[in-house]
Image 1: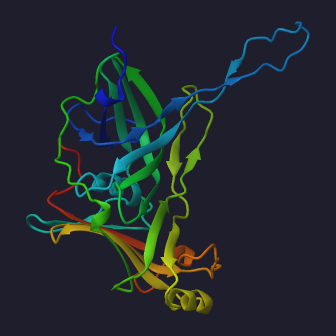
Image 2 (image 1 turned 45 degrees about the horizontal axis):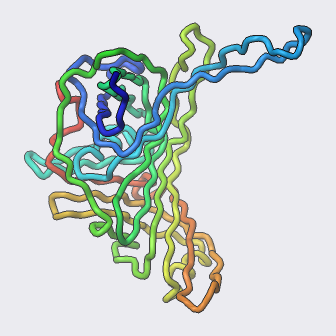
Image 3 (image 1 turned 60 degrees about the horizontal axis):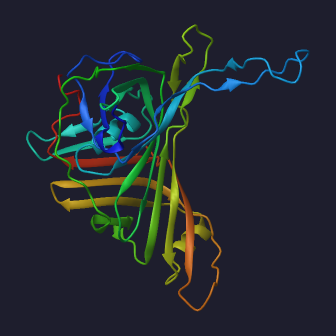
Length: 319
C-alpha cells in the first residue's frame, strides 16, 4: 500500500470562465509550490444537550470552509498567474518577447481559479474551485530564497481518484533570488536597508448564504491595502524627516535577472510613521518603518506591478 509523499504531489491551476466551475481538462498549468494547505474543512459541534447521563450525544456538522495558504516562488513566469488573480487582467505590450505585463490596483473584476492538488500514490485528487486570491506577502533580505505566501478563499472542493486537470502546460521556472532584489525611493536606490516586508491584500468578503451544498455564493473584493515594513540602519534623517513631515514617496520593490526578465511592485504614494530609535547594545542602530500605501491621485491608483518575461499572455493554455 502506497503512502502519500509531498515530493510526489503536484499542483495545477487554471482561470475559470464561470465562477466555481473548473475549466475543461487540458486547460491547466503545472504550478511550482513549496507548501499548500488550501482545502476544505468541516468542524464538528459538540452537543450541549442534557438528560442523557455523563456521556455526550453525537456531535453535529458545522459549516464548510474552503481556504488556505500557498507558498510559491517569486519567479519571472509563474508569478504572472498570481498577479492576475490578485490584481485582475494586465495590460500587455510587446509584439514579441520580451512582453511587459502591467497589473494595476483598484480593479473590481478579479478572476477566479480552479486549483487541483494531486497525490498520485493514494491516489487522491482535490479540485478546489471558485478560488480568489486574498493576499500576497513576502520578505526582501540580503540572502536566501524568495518565496511568497498567497492566501486564498474558495467556494468548494471536490475529490476524486483521478485527475480532472488532464495534461498540464509546463513553463520553465526562472526564479529570482535575494541577490536580484532592490528597493528604490522616488527612483533612487534606498541605502542602508536591512530588510523589507511587503503585503498586498484585497480584503475579500465571503458571501456566506444558506444553501444546501454548504458552499459560499462568492467572494467580493473590498478596500485593498498595501503595507509592510522596511528596516534600515540609522545613517541619515531622510526617512525620519518624511515621517515627521507627513509627506509621501514612491517605493519600488523589484527583482531583475536582466533587462528582459524582471519584476517590480511600485507603491506610488507611501506614508511612513515616526518610529522609535532603540539602542539595544554597542552595535548599529536600526529603525523600523511600518509603511502604508494609499492612492496617488496623479497616477490614479495605489500600486502597479510590472512583470517582464517571455510569456505572451496569461489566458489558460488551451485558449
